[in-house]
Image 1 (tube, helix red, strand yellow):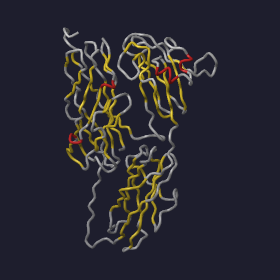
Image 2 (cartoon, rainbow, N blue to C red):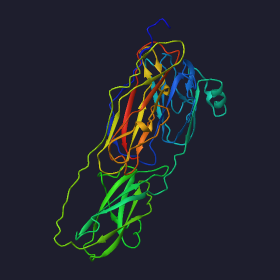
Image 3 (cartoon, rainbow, N blue to C red):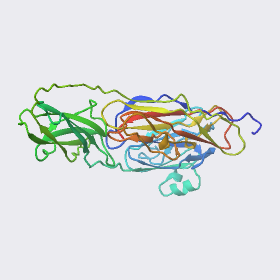
Image 4 (cartoon, rainbow, N blue to C red):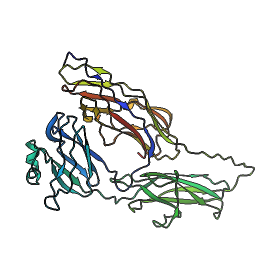
Length: 422
């Protein structure tokens, strides 16, 4: 192998960022997808073996699993041990082969333990509840999915960053009340409504005056909201207390937060000055590629680092809803073989996040190297009221090339997304 020209250019092609904004989490949690390699050593990277990798996956009810064929051309399948009708598996994939049908996916809606096997290389009894763990330990081609019950959101959202203008009113008949409603529990839900009330105490939940989402729709777990306070019936010199509370999509009302407003007369000789600020968008731009360059095989594992240009995130919405950046990647593939995405890692040093213009910069969530995969990995986030402006961030990428990798040009598809909410 050492006499060959080398692996070639092991380059990761960076796809354009997802400019369609993900505006939050619906329900109680966002479903995830887990990947199992079919025909690869359990816990390893060797292809052409009769195993699943990983052989055991723990997830939450509602998540999904995708089984991908190892790039070795061998045939396998994924067959459920459970048979509601005797002799007929509850679910079964077609024959999986990298050069034919390479993948099979299934969601697991209910909690419980699901076992399965490859009917071409294992027996059904190998995947029974009684035998599954011993079969996995023995290296048989069986697998197990453990689906935990999804947590239920029972905690209401909080109201914060209340502001009112003009304050004092200076003769104005109304004022604008703004706030941020955030459902930050675990699990959390989208915000569904917000309301304001006036008085020594907040109105009962559901009895206040409806407020609106600043961005036009309640569809995220953090929402900037606005409402109009009519003060025409209050005498000059009166101070009133304003209350705001929110409700999430799970039906939970949160506690009310308050601020005060001073009702005053129009100063003599005063002239009102007004300006209307229109919100912009939430965008992310990327450099053209993630170049790892070339490496020559030596018979030992190789560790490559890529130098990339700065990525740029801009939040011009003017809502203060916060945002986050997530990254996913496929395996590296070529005409000769593949490199598992688990060998592809990312980190984002906090020092590499630079404020071009704006307020508080986002915070890195991966200051040490973390593996990429098909499940979105959050690499940084800006909290509510933060990240209002333009920020550059420069991730570090690392790729481990196993010693047994075949020569060729390898590529992976990397997707970088900017999403509303911390």
